[in-house]
Image (cartoon, rainbow, N blue to C red; front, side):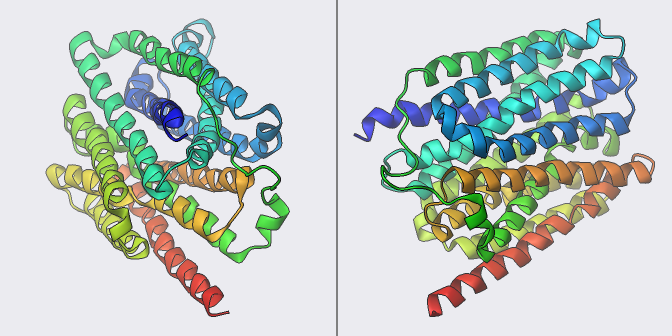
Length: 397
């Protein structure tokens, strides 16, 4: 029974790699777009905002249509849109009178695909028969990190060997991945999320739960803590630290992603022996320290180490909150996963947007923006304590 779902779980792993491509390929081109198309930093910031903004909108409306059209059709649609957005990115900026509009439309198209993947992949894995769902969930989220690291490594090597002016070739290559995975999802078995005869909680029922709101705030802060550094790591390394693009991408975004994946892999392997709350609290404190290193220490080497350490520290935040939500809210169904994804994507949009906005107020100084974003790991630390207190009170009753 379990073996027949191995291909499904593998396809879900690849689905998160697709989402990593969607979220991390274009940020590597920010500086190139800024110089080639003469796009100011304020408009570059809008690309991040629209990417995650569209994704959170999809998180919200997916509650209505995913259960109606089914997970298989939704998965295929998500991959098709992801591929289409990447392909349009190579065409629209050249044929439209304003290149930024072409880039923005392309980002919006693949953002719809990325938003659907965020909602769909976790519940599909959750529904697959497994001996330890927490480990499976952590392994799933680690593949986003490996995808992010792979995108940065392969893209950086391509830019180094072929030149960044040939980025469109690589965009087409990346678009092949979601096309292939869509074909796989057309064939693999997909288990129902809710047992036959049961019904998942409705949104109104979720809204009545105090723990749900705390978990949503935690997801928001988890997404913001991760993306405030991740989305700006390449630009920060080049502009703020004065290193070359190759070194900046390898030591910044790639090391961030690799250590984030390592953190999730370690939890996936040893999670049954670790106290999740304690691990998340220590991660928040480490994240705060990393933010301070990046923003306040002027040495380039320390800043790059700070980016890497930040990746390790945020690794457990997203899957850890998902695990806490699955345990705290029984029968949450599609609505729970969609609302958590919505909250997470609000953070993924708000974190880098806040960092970019504050940076703009300080003449493009990204250190100031990253320092301002330290509020998110601080709030997440508070949320962990509140969730634990609420769980203890419920247990006492």
